[in-house]
Length: 442
Ligand SMILES: Cc1cc2nc3c(=O)[nH]c(=O)nc-3n(C[C@H](O)[C@H](O)[C@H](O)COP(=O)(O)OP(=O)(O)OC[C@H]3O[C@@H](n4cnc5c(N)ncnc54)[C@H](O)[C@@H]3O)c2cc1C
Image 1: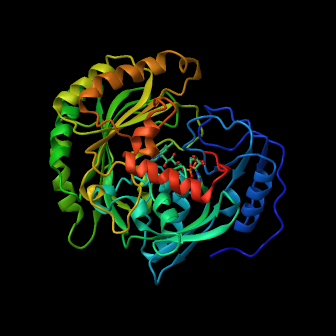
Image 2 (image 1 turned 180 degrees about the vertical axis):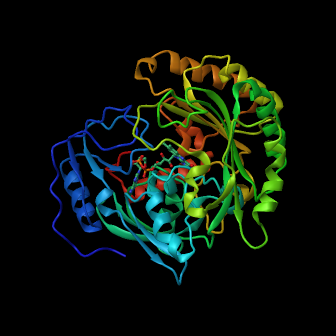
Image 3 (image 1 turned 45 degrees about the vertical axis):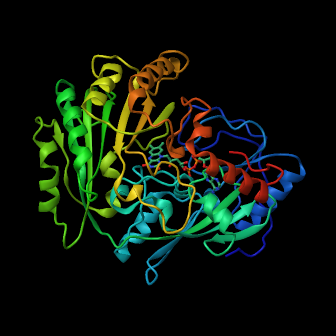
């Protein structure tokens, strides 16, 4: 599905890049914002000719390091959503956020398998596999990709699918650092309009009771129940609702897709054990439109400076809950805004219909940590706190990583162990085939 050739957009002098995470000082030599795949191809060829790397940039939720030199290729100019209601699919341009896809799909009774934050870019998310707050029920978001339009590192526009460039398509489904600029994808949408979900926020004094109960409960819930728990240190700022402002709370997140067989009453019954562990400070569980899935995690949507780290876990039992609280609980004083554990398993653990490079199918839980948004703490206190937490959780760690949750605070070798050896070697082969000169940088 290549676009018609067009005059390439002229690169501009670098300016501050409009990215979500402000922690990294990006310093590209130049910035371009092409509007078509043909313009992307021209920009890639021009950069390659000048010996420069091309860094595809989405919303900037996922950069773990600064861009140094080369061309920052902003994909926002390619954004757009075209829903094909008859096929139950959508064509999503690069630079599009999940909120925009959900908004376009909802009038057709459809919804995308998006992530926790509506402002995250669809393409960067899908390239890492894409872990949705509905993933236990529906699987990885990349399981729903039908095809992708890609400008390769050699500047060619190709359409990749299970039957066209299948090696490249395999790498696009979870390989994360891919040998091209993805300019658009076509994904299947879910015929889903309603979700039972939201959050239960508990006081710090109930942290041990809630976290140990969640550990037991989450291990047994059916695949219909999607859940995560987070230790949150919320800022004393007006955008935080009053009962939670400036407090340390434990946030249990729930999402249960609804249909004729799964009604809110059934969903409420499934989560009742967590509702009654202690008295929540705030309880937002309710029936929601599927497009409002962002309300489940209620992630911040304003740009901020944070450092992150992630790991996959084999298990998360009551002892793991206590170890986590000792390192990052209310008494620990750790400079961490979010320490989150997501229950995986269910359909996430099933083999895909089309072979892919998704990492993390066999993990039981995912751990993700976001620092306090305080750059003065980034050099010493934050890495020390993350190191202490990693040590505390080591008995439960799988030793593998999910690429969408590798952050600046992960050790560099997290990228080497994210994929099993055979998958990593095959990803390198695909990169060498489609980008032999290593033009595409991430
Ligand atoms: C608040 C928050 C919530 C999140 N929630 C989830 C979640 O629920 N589940 C989950 O799986 N992940 C989640 N993530 C991680 C998120 O999926 C990644 O950060 C993702 O990379 C963001 O995509 P982006 O399009 O914004 O890309 P960017 O952050 O701009 O880029 C990230 C990487 O993707 C590459 N990239 C981006 N666009 C393209 C393109 N068009 N072609 C080729 N390469 C490209 C970039 O080169 C870079 O290496 C979350 C992140 C944040 C900050």
